[in-house]
Image 1 (tube, rainbow, N blue to C red):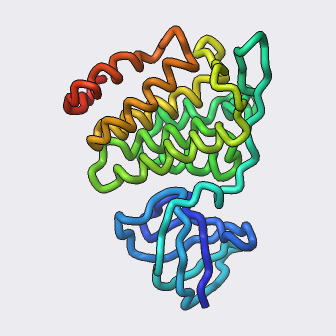
Image 2 (cartoon, rainbow, N blue to C red):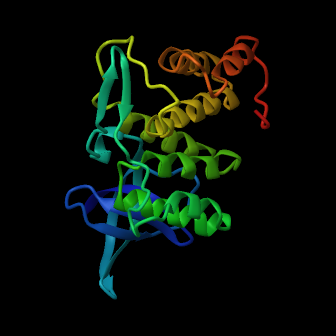
Amino acid sequence: MEKQYIVLKLNNMGYRTRELETGNIVSLKSDIDFETFELETITVEVEKEWIFKKNSYVSGKLLKHELILANLDVPPLEYENIERNRYVFKDYSGYGFYTPGRDPISEALRMDPKRGYDALARLWEHYPQCIDALVQMGMMNFNSTERFKGAFNCFSGATYIAEQNFPVDETAQFPWFFSNNRPYLRALLALSCWYWKNGDFDEAALLARKILRINLKDDQGARHILEAVRNKEVFRPDF
């Protein structure tokens, strides 16, 4: 029997997933092939299903994997128009999500990489509109040769979630000055850097120009990326 799942995170012994049809959280026991990464829809030929300590597990053969962002099924982020063409997202930072007065993302970034990744993935699973959790997961994959594709998935997913219900008017701006806009702007910059590092200069330039359009002050330095990719420079890890 074939079933489809969304990959939420990579585990030591497989993948933590959400079953596409039921929405149930399921741990897939499988060898990590370093071809299948976060947010991908995977098709599995299920061989065995079981429950242990109230947790659901499945084992089987991975038949197909593909990144279908619409399958994430995350509600669009909301924003408000504060003046003319300037917009601000509502607060999706995750601050106080588990415990009042605590910031789970900052706490995760202070942990060792494995525990930090697990904490960020858990936050995104529980609060999928918190796109900063995805961005930070992607950053943990960015410098890994094996998991570099996973960084693309995380950055693309964060951008997709933020932009689902965007204004049609291309003059819309989301200034960095407003902290609630920063997760989205970080996702765009990270995705631009991913394309740059991958040698996709045109895509990197397209995103850099987009950042410059929606955040005129360019607090992130997208203009430097644009200059570098126009000159087809090799990605600088210290950027």
